[in-house]
Image (tube, rainbow, N blue to C red; front, side, top):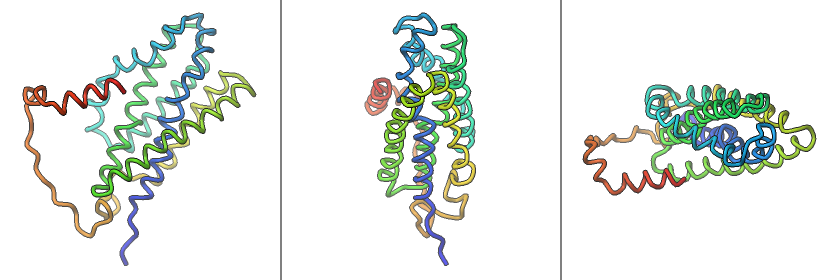
Length: 230
């Protein structure tokens, strides 16, 4: 008897892990900016500089790690780093340099547990229905990010921002059981094929491009500009 296609379970699991690893912390960090300004005696410009500065310093992370390690392992490692950074934000001393250091840790965690590994996993499991699967995946970021806003506001009002940040760090680790026990990198890990097809898809060879050709390509610059703007 043919086993049911597991790909939609992958979508359901990554919906949650993507929301936890990326949506909740990324969209809710601005909630804490006023508290950081007060705790660090810093300006808003100093505080908002954290993420772009960390992003520039960690641009090398994706190219170095993404093609060398399992996406599942990257999500585990990345959420661990995000957890450490968020707890660090909640417990740090009044040091702007320490704040920037934790943002670098957070950025590394974001890059290796956020969009790239989740997109890779879903792309492995789907070909024809990839757009639908990817769309559902990205709903998780917004849905859990919005839900996290209400929870964090409650925690800040009920306790304080230090407790809220610490609990946010712990919350990110709720992704681990799903990654360990539900998510698989590829359908072949379970004896299946993309989209649940009986036969594996025919692979087409793509000719390699030189850097000169790449830099002269309109789609490359369009993607680069779009990525920078986002």
